[in-house]
Length: 300
Ligand SMILES: [Zn+2]
Image (cartoon, rainbow, N blue to C red; front, side, top):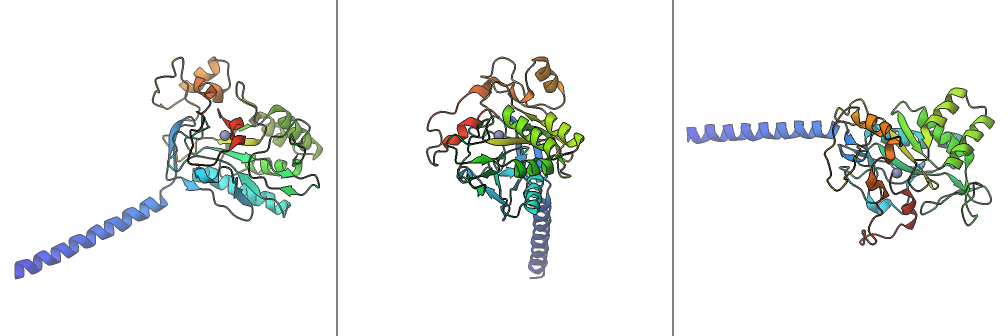
């Protein structure tokens, strides 16, 4: 009886310890900082956070079913703050985000990067013909005159400039690239000059905005990439480069050699992988609605 009682006490104590350990673990897991692991095009995401929708931020309906709005805390906070900042200036402004990464990162259909929680697609702020905010269901291609192909949507210079200003000045993360078609890059820089933006801001925007070569033009959204967050110790800054034979998928590695190889190839760092020209197989996402506008965003 005494032995049994001792055993029972020991068991209860043991269970108690296990419960305590489990709660401690849960607490640690809950507060674990997000980790971007590997490269934007060969990576994954740990403890990512989901973009928070709000009165100032929504998910593009065409991509919402894919649940690929997971990111590092730094990227999510930067984008949420930007939506808030634009809203302070324009009470009716709603930022529309497309896809970032999947919950655990890794390969994602119709994108070549977006694997490590550091990339996100952001739809342009648009206006209708009456200069009212226009919230589309999918991405809208904008021509070089600022209008959509069917002339029902117009690039919103003021709100897009406010968005980019907030993003590049963010204290949450540092941007390394903003992919956008060349004529919208020129349009934004021209608007910034007209608004008497500081030379430093204009220089920064000019250096970040680029249309990568050899991929379809980014004429319906901004693709924003941030630098490796300081706390992501296994993060690889530059895209992984497959030299010649893309059939064999190699493992990511750390450090600068990839950048050097990318530069030595004379091509933009985000366009060095031959797989970037691969178009997803027709009907590869049969369980979800088609999203025809996404074809323009493949490769990055
Ligand atoms: Zn993208």
